[in-house]
Image (cartoon, rainbow, N blue to C red; front, side, top):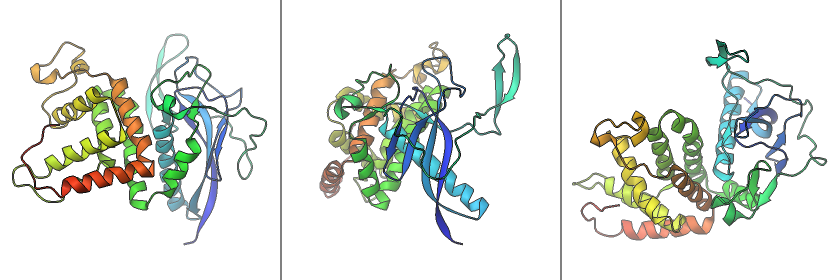
Length: 322
């Protein structure tokens, strides 16, 4: 079976309107849809855009379909990790849901989005299109972004993408897992605040160092997980101390079945164990976004590894409070 480079154009969606174009080298390109394409009426909605990219495919239809799906998922996750917006794939056409008609009725309809994508080989010409606005990176990742003018990117986006592609395969795989869970946060949070929080923490755990490489007779490797989590946050996310303190405590209680976020029961409670502190989701999301972005910086990863190695070399002590 021979592999070859294929170029694909397809729709994706952003919760912020995309009014400009952006191309990263010969890897991928973001292009706004035609002015006549269907769009939401709300400011925050799933705004369609054209996502085109190259991937290593094959003439074998079934295998190529799988490769294209993997390449799409990884690219969308990467964009979620680097952009101050939530990016969504095209809804699966096999899914159905109840929808409202303009006249006020209801019917059970198939999910999906369709509008002709421009044909032709290679990347679309974007010379006459406005560029996606770029904002100073530190302000961007601290949430100081004005999205009224549409989708934006940090001004170091090329550098961050270069860092991603320059990583070792193991580091890139870990980042892909972290970016996947961060990208799934919006839909999981929509279903359950508790599930959303676990997704955010799982994203961090994917790139956190394994601070203990031996089995502790008292706690297994739980202390190592907590310490690795703490090392990542201390080195990759300066400040935000209160959010970092609450983060793992909340995740542990939810993931181990001892409670849920307060509003899972409509704010009416469900027993004292269910009423955990309702931390600011926006601040917790900011912490994860910063951790993923900073982990792409080689110097930050190197510092995390040095600290983790030093701590792992110390004699194991009894359970450490996060």
